[in-house]
Image 1 (cartoon, one colour):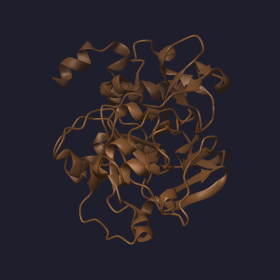
Image 2 (cartoon, rainbow, N blue to C red; image 1 turned 90 degrees about the vertical axis):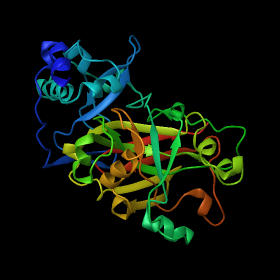
Image 3 (tube, rainbow, N blue to C red; image 1 turned 30 degrees about the vertical axis):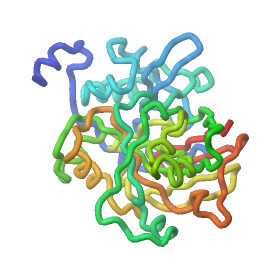
Length: 326
């Protein structure tokens, strides 16, 4: 079946090879976020004159290479791009090396890298220091819940503060994206099914999560705009160890969360293995891997987002989200 699919692809997409690893550090930093030299930063963007397109950020906050201009046969939406697999990534690498079709950053608007994920799979209580903050026992198995895909919004879009909630909170999280379909995936093969990593904010209405709707989480987690993602999917070959990354959140410039992904209880591969025994994973599915301590609900006194606040979530090597609450 795979051979038939590849034969049906345009000539430009038939080549496939493993992307070379990005092992050297870049000497430049953008907005305080370090990045790796040669990193592939996949983005979904639009210009004032066109609909959504696929691109590559040259660096965090840098110009964008228009992949659809480089190869018009490429899909224009990220889920479909990822479904093509290694062949599409190989074209992206060639576009990156070509130095062509570069759009000035001022001419583009970044969207969520995957505006329409098939699933948004979330993990609760997955940081040891977050468990300590709440004085709760470390889970023996991953605690899995979901956000509705309609909650996804862009890295710089506004978060809508719903009138129905008085306790809107922040949660900076490491997200990863599935790039290859699989079920009952062994932990030793889990990374083969991941395309890359990005920053997420699991915005949460604590009153609806903890007090209303039978204390089931999904409504409190799934208001529109409650899942900012981005700014880019940084391909896994350019993240040497996703479990050794500084992770932070600031509200109006004040540091409220500051930890490291080394505190994750269930690591990336374990989460893929655990979830895939229940559900089939598809390209474009998104995992949110939990948050460190410092969320508003557990501060003394509790602190919640209000209209006009600016929330910045950032992870080393990946970039930063910056969203205003309205």
